[in-house]
Image 1 (cartoon, rainbow, N blue to C red):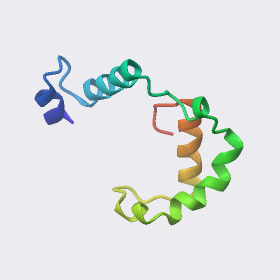
Image 2: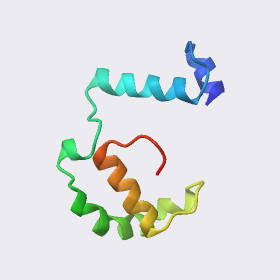
Image 3: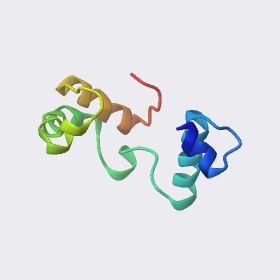
Image 4: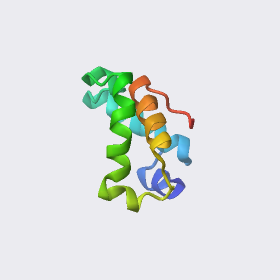
Length: 85
C-alpha cells in the first residue's frame, strides 16, 4: 500500500493514506458507504454468508474465511464499520 500511495502522490504514504483516498474518491463519485444504503439489511448477513463461502472467488482470498467470518464481514459492510472485527 505504501508503494501505491507513493505512486498516487499521496501526502500520507501509508495504508491509511490509500484508505482515505479511496473513501474520498467514493464520496466524490457517489458510491454509497454502506450496503444498507442499497437496501441490504442485517438479517441478510446470515443467509448470504454460506453463499459467499461457496463462491469460487473465495479460494483466492489471502485470508482463510469461515461462514462466521463472512457473516461478520457483511454486518461490517451493512453498518459501515471500517475497523477489523
